[in-house]
Length: 424
Ligand code: AMP
Ligand code: GLY
Image 1 (cartoon, protein in one colour):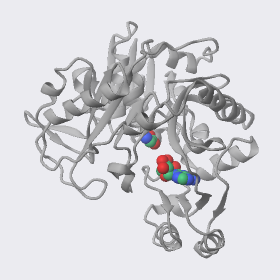
Image 2: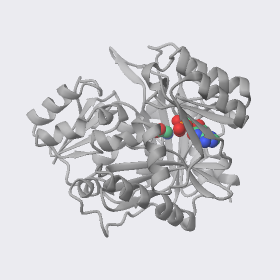
Image 3: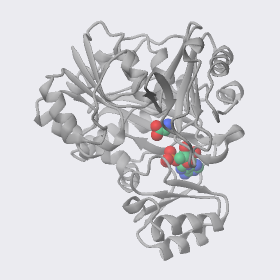
């Protein structure tokens, strides 16, 4: 089989790494890919947002399966276009990807199908939104309706912060059109967990639970980022909790989407808060999580490709995934300054030394080649990932890897996975 992976970050490196282990796969293309991916796949210089060029390439190479990593091409309907071009594609249609692309759509779906989530109201003008937050008080959560690269959410601890967030989204338009509508939500308390689940439009099959670390600094301090690290399993989601999430969140979502005439195929990502009154949805995403994928796939013993094909041809029912019993931890090494402005082109050393330990993989998130040298090319640069028999050993092994890697200004959290040690 020829597989075409779209995207070029750590998530796509992990996907390509896992797909390359499939006995069915003879060739992998990746657009645009990155230097880490280039060791496993033929990288093609087409941007992940250039839908028409990607579709033309997939058709020209007669790929057997296209796997779409990021949300942007999904929300632009790349899966619909690939289907029209006769290419089997793993991921939701544009209509189904609304689940991530519009928070307002997702909230309305959850209300209609009784999926537990935070109480909310939505607004298209700043004064009404401000009146509402004044009435509700802080803490309160302000979300831009549209896609904002994971940065469109403010958990406001004070009314001033809430008002400032509304003004920057709606009046100053820092997220462009994505902020012309805002969702204002009740603040939920508890531990977060991410569930990635396969869906074939009718049936849903969860992968192992994981947990991301969004804030930039140790102890969950500082601004939110795209994710500073992750671990799997997430002990907060035991078997009983996973079953509850399946019944109250995943199944109603997939059934609801089918009833709405937007059958959902691909990865359904539920970002959850495990509250005292049970799991509540913080957000749905229409794709593999980043960096959750980097810790879930290394624990997956089964071949990934048959599950993707089963989602496409609606044959997921009855399939089961085998998991490695241990744990996986991934530490993001970011550029100094991230999530604010940061330099690019800084030389990176030590990846081969880090990978010398069995069970350590360094997924490239934001790198490029500068002649013969590997240099930084993004905010999140590397995902130093380790599998071991339990969370403490995987944490130790991942940080051992981190110590061997050097680039000037490198910034990483030193407490990735620690929450798993205190969770009950
Ligand atoms: P999102 O981009 O929707 O994943 O939100 C980013 C982060 O904001 C989440 O990972 C949570 O930590 C936090 N968040 C979002 N919604 C809520 C909420 N209703 N209550 C508490 N925290 C939230
Ligand atoms: N880890 C959060 C996301 O993928 O959106």
